[in-house]
Length: 288
Image 1 (cartoon, rainbow, N blue to C red):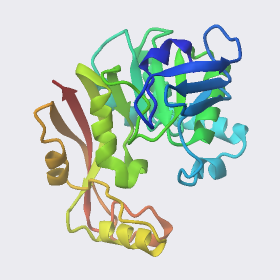
Image 2 (image 1 turned 180 degrees about the vertical axis):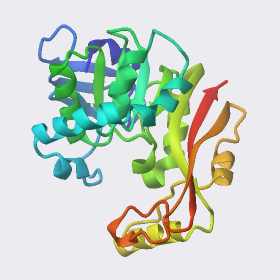
Image 3 (image 1 turned 45 degrees about the vertical axis):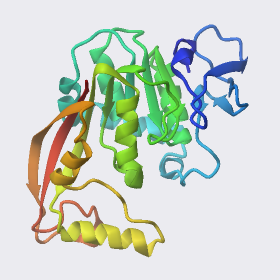
Image 4 (image 1 turned 120 degrees about the vertical axis):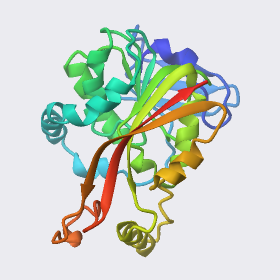
């Protein structure tokens, strides 16, 4: 985490200012340290990542998928160039600016983040947020080894971001699927930390409101003891969510696909469900 973003941080528990109460002496990029607010909530910095997730955070699938750094890097070397076409509509939806700060939300394996860097001048302040501390530690190591300077990595809940209001000029997300039941709160948080006239671009997909695929997905969650997903799965629902005088939005379809009628659903993925359509879209939100 870079020192330059300290003024942008706020305690996710109480909203108060955060101060660096211990650090490793590094001038710019902090590899370890401790952040504390006036209410004495303490947040560590571990392996270059500011940690705002608690011990009761959801299980981390990244720690199982990429236990070894070498496997994570191999995945990156494949996904970053091969996902350029997938993420380009998001990148093109952002304003053409050379200054930050910019927020990459729900970074995951970094396929959007590391493609997005070409949009900015070297050293432009970029902040990466993901719930997974494990993934963020690997992303930080990868960025350091490849001399991608200026990226601050943070582990935090997208529905409770550790930033002051109006902190970012632009925000991008390759979907918010992993926020699941917190999707509405995550979008509202993104708008909160966006500057006036700022832009938030994200990919998403819509299925029919009576989709059998969606019913199967919800049934699977319930069978595992989970709550319903809360994922906004139709254009009508999404339009209702974004009906606010504070923002204006556009939804542009990038692709429409129909599920193969002979596909084995048990082998996954569920979407697009056989004989059902799925629309891939780019949602662009501008804060007034």
